Length: 225
Image 1 (tube, rainbow, N blue to C red):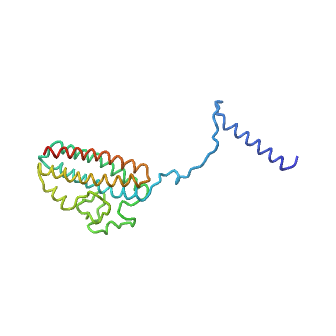
Image 2: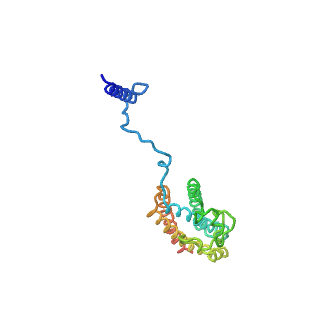
Image 3: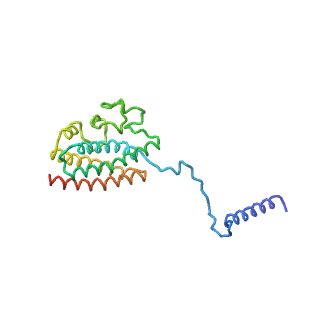
């Protein structure tokens, strides 16, 4: 027997013994050995995303923050109908956790929570201060500084809501929040159409469903004021 034949025989025996070892557990139970095993790198396991996902997260955080600020304004007032205050509480309860979810997703990916990729760039934008974006009052953010953000209230809108009282405040809150929600739905629909991250697209779907229901509720409430 020549060396080549001997080597081939040894290799064949190795395959047989390996297959036998893989097909039996310590208790003797027979299991099917996998036909092939492909190693997956951490990068391959990570959820893929694209620029649409990133922009959606970056824009929705301050968008939600303004809705929460508007809700806080109405909750601090007296003479507001109970149904309106309940809606404001509902908006806060839904959008606060969504902000945290989006912030966590951006942080885990090392993506800045700002309109550009340049570190600290948002601090140099008109109207910006040294405050973190997520805690910054939205009236300090000029509309022209946030391209693509739809339904945002202007500084004048926020001032009008702040000054209003009673039924007038409730009516203004509902009117403004309908526009605000419509903008969020439009942004979420863009994410559904163009996004790539399954988690972010799923959140966009949730925003569309939840905020459309709240719009329907707000329109009904307006007929009672």
